[in-house]
Length: 157
Image 1 (cartoon, rainbow, N blue to C red):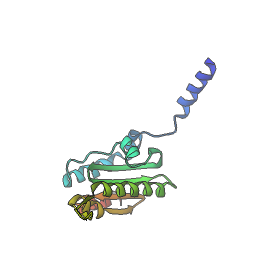
Image 2: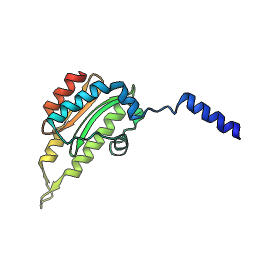
Image 3: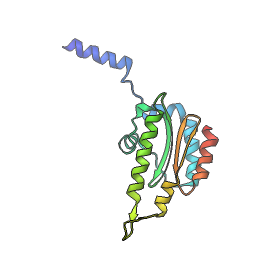
Image 4: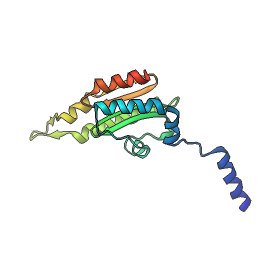
């Protein structure tokens, strides 16, 4: 039994677990990511990075599907530029579509006649930017959509 456990430990240490951590992904893209985040923070302050856990639980996107991602959130405002691994683009698009649909429902308010009241937050979500730039799926919800998009295009486009 000890030999089996030791063999497994050696195998795992040699081959790894097969999944990258956010830090390993960040190491590949550090310069571009930091530049984008710094530029966007000048435009839209108080944005926090979307954690790997939040990416999985709220957005339905596992890190194994992602080559890289750059993000910021101060709900409902969010920007995410996510580069899917090969063959995973549609899975990620579907997950993000579901996230934004759910966000629209969450932000919907109703009048006495049960008609949706278009709040400023809901308008921003509905008027979000959705583009593909150089293999990245880019989604932006902000009152500064075009400025943030320009930063992203300039750095990854």
